[in-house]
Length: 214
Image 1 (cartoon, rainbow, N blue to C red):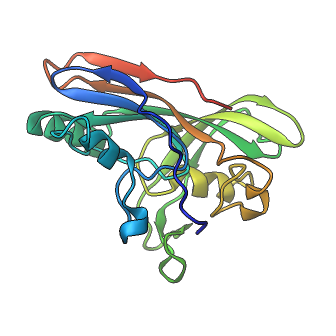
Image 2 (image 1 turned 30 degrees about the vertical axis):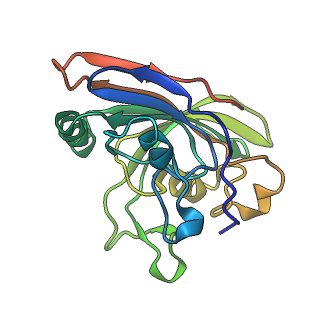
């Protein structure tokens, strides 16, 4: 892994109420602390300094930016956690991938498991992998790269990154799965653009969105 130098940017709060906190996570910042003092700086630690009661619901990879929701009460954490577990949330990501992705829409259905000798890498494994499904839609494409929307139906670790790699169109700037492109881009070109869920207070559908910075 590359040296951890998280961005020193102010918190970008998208929404805040009595139950939930929605944040735009910057690329390069861990969601939760890693092992060791050098990996202690992370989004939840920064949030705890302002919101001592904040509770983790889900994660985004270090190099992914975009919409993350946190609970501000134990009830909200449980309610949201079950929605993620039961695949009741709807997530939309934007990515720039290598090459011309064809056809314009499609689905990747490839089971994933951790690649133990090469952790934290994940890999496709048809025998012992857990089900993982991603829908895609191409927004625009050239011979060099495609701009795509990704709709994960499951929430496996590194799912979008491994699924795009398996299609032969890795996410540009990905230090793990496309290291040959990492020097050409300022960051990994993957952004959690939109999150739809039910509000823990009353169950009304809510949508949070932040445009990709690339």
